[in-house]
Length: 422
Image (cartoon, rainbow, N blue to C red; front, top):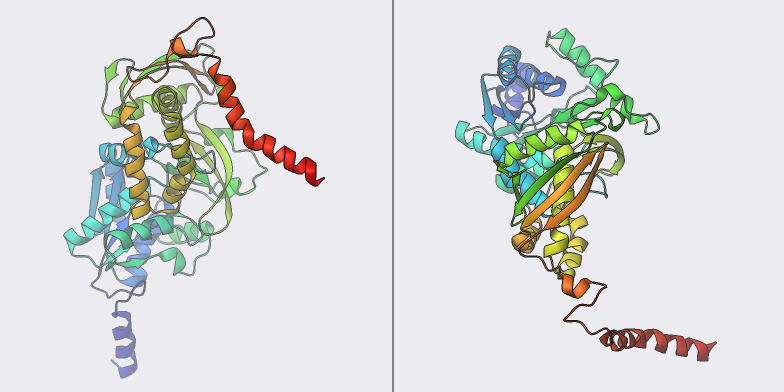
């Protein structure tokens, strides 16, 4: 071996942040079994000489996880972890987010955003367990997921080195990945004719890329998986009831269910009635606009139902103050700051607000709509004897005159000043 070739070999073995790992480095790869992560798994072995430990989180995507395990081994993983995280996902991530009523840009219920911190957290834990120095993900260099994964890594273990293949390799499109997969005999389901990507978990499914990149083009009807078209939904409405305790849904139609089971059942009901479809152009954290299509049937029902209970149980100014903070809270989750101190601060405040959000709501599911039919709570601030337009008690209508006069004082003063100056 020449001195020059020995020098090239030693340079490949020098680990650095985001750089080329040594040939003995272990990498914990967030693996879904799809096109991107399957190509990445082989690429990490072939081009980086890594020992790849694949990690697949069961977040309710409903896939054949044993087939994913076998595929990872066939593609080259030395070990595969597949873990059922559905209850943790809903209890510790989805429900807290819903308690904050997070909606990004008035439409997106953040189903992909909220899954990434849990996956990345578990990668960090597995890296410690396996004594691995590297973690890797399949997020592109244009998307939000790279930020979500890597901010979580930084928050939980900044000593880990990150390999982000989409920012390192020469491939620039999913067509390139399809060619790579075919060359290396990696089985894939995506084709060049229909290359949009999907992300599915117990809370939602998202679609982006490919045929969806033109925001004028309608989403193909055959694309949707969780919901029927509202036009094809049953012509008979379905009535359901939900009970909340301190902001969390606990029973559906009087039956107490675990968080994951309750959400799964609401997905079935909402999907049957075409509830929860969203098509929007959103602002990515990295600076560009992106078209995304989402299905969130159960989450849509829960969001509407909680607001109905809140309308009875929350003080006016508390609700208005919380609602003013909601866009910032949603933005933090969307941008990947789940483990940031500011998100934790807001979560503490929102959870305090939810202490009185206990009650029952009755809803109608029909042709893509979720409509509140009734709500009740033993913590209700709604007092019929005060609100009634009939004879009531506890309120003297004459008092309203002074109230209006005091609030009108500054308006009248401003008008008088303007009259003089003009």
